[in-house]
Every structure is written in structure tokens, then in C-alpha cells.
Amino acid sequence: MIRAQIHGDQDFDRPRRRAYPANPSLRMQFHRPVRYNAIRGAYHLSIQLEAPAVVWGANGKCWAFLHDFDASAILQILDDYRHASEERRGPYSNPFDGRRGEGR
Image (cartoon, rainbow, N blue to C red; front, side, top):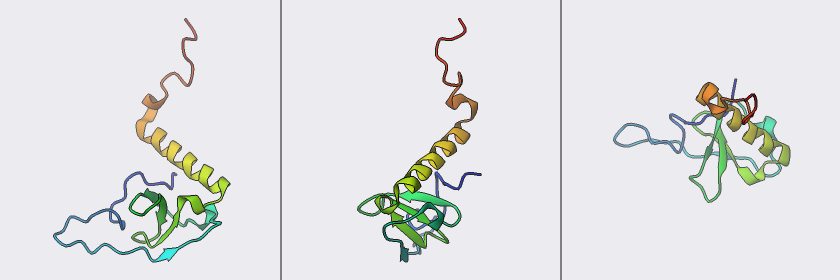
């Protein structure tokens, strides 16, 4: 199961489908160094602030700037998004399994 969400639904930076959205605000910022295990549950990236941020928790309650994560956490987050993209595209994401021109 991939924990990264490509599209949020009711998170702080996604407008609700009502006349006056009552979007919650970011409440708990994590500061450097942030480890991957600090993320609880599903998460997504946001560009609503001055730098990209990773947002998780109920309605985007917890967040940390992407540059505040340690190196191994950043690599794990990028790997989660790569896996999510491959799952979404299915077999068409890599139809020849990385082989080009072999087997002719």
C-alpha cells in the first residue's frame, strides 16, 4: 500500500465544494531534522507555502517543509511517489521493462 496521496480531497490546500470553505489551518509544524517515521498515515505534498511541504494527519494538521526532512526520508518520499505513479499508470508505465531494442 502506498501512503503518498497524489490528490487530496478535503485537506487544507484543497478547496471544498461549498460556497464558503472552512479549510482547517496548519497547526503542528515539525522542524529539522524530520524523519520518515514522523509521518503518520497518508500524506501529500503541498506548494501553498513559500517552499514545498509534506502534509499529513486529519485535514492536514501536521506538516513539515520538504527541506527539513533528513536525506533518507527525502529519498523514501520520492520513492513513494514513484511507486504511486507506477501503480496509477499500470503496465503502460514501463511496457518493455526497461529493455529497448532487445530481442529483435
